[in-house]
Image (cartoon, rainbow, N blue to C red; front, side, top):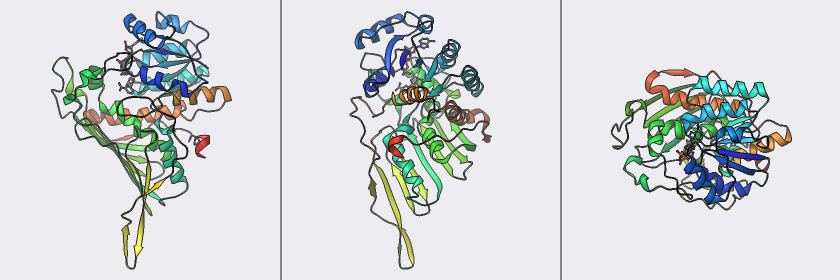
Length: 375
Ligand SMILES: NC(=O)c1ccc[n+]([C@@H]2O[C@H](COP(=O)([O-])OP(=O)(O)OC[C@H]3O[C@@H](n4cnc5c(N)ncnc54)[C@H](O)[C@@H]3O)[C@@H](O)[C@H]2O)c1
């Protein structure tokens, strides 16, 4: 399946670093609205280029457009790609507003095209192992989940020195303006909806705690939360509390509390993160948690990641899943309705700064299948 990249920025290098894991994907060209970035990225990776988005979309060979532009460009680029008859795999969020996300999904359906949005971390070995353990009732009936996406005081870190392989700087202005919730909630939301099905409602609180994060750019800091906490009520009855911040110290753990024990992991950004189970023990008249955790074997070994930095993620896995679904004529495990629902949850949490109160989800999805190697 032939793919083309729009957006030769920081994250594009991450996609290139795992492209070789998926021989069914052939990258036939890249473009960006900044010509110097096309040149720098294409020369670094020895890739063919398109001079513009229009030129890329006019190429009948392109099957899937990989939209790696900044969040606020996602809607216009994905819409143009769908209108040109291309399948779209977009970085997160699918769109910045739920109306725009719905418009994209309707347009794709009208045209018989696929559209999906990152992250694809629910397809990781760790997530698939957790899901299998849940299906096999390893901790009994699940009532409650705690998920954390705290990244520490990012504005105090030397982010000016965070440079990708091809030399692209980390886009701090965009990251601070879009905010950690819209950027990161999806990393656990996509696991939770896969495990527990569609959400019914979400009650969230978000706030901007550090208002003068960055001195050298004009921001609207009060509009962008740097902390959010959300309680998601799933239709299945499970409740999950999800926290996102760039204030509290780094913590990406997930804990799933069941009647017979706790399933946990340390970090959803690592596809090979170990999965632990801690079981309840009954000793005479007492019930207590076994102090020893058991490590569950991952459903399969992960590929050999060469990425630098805080994560070990196969960014191209979601694109490969889309390509396989198209080839096999089946729904993708990251189908449009799944991406739309996840996007609606992330936007509702982000917007709780303005709206407060409970939000009732307006979208739902057909449950996806586990990966073949995790069934
Ligand atoms: N930065 C990270 O660590 C990271 C990690 C995972 C995911 N992401 C996601 O990846 C996406 C891109 O982030 P990034 O860090 O690469 O940003 P970036 O600013 O480094 O790169 C984005 C590129 O898209 C280009 N672009 C923007 N609008 C365009 C348009 N209309 N047409 C053509 N090109 C356009 C920009 O010129 C820029 O080169 C975002 O959605 C972000 O949420 C980022």
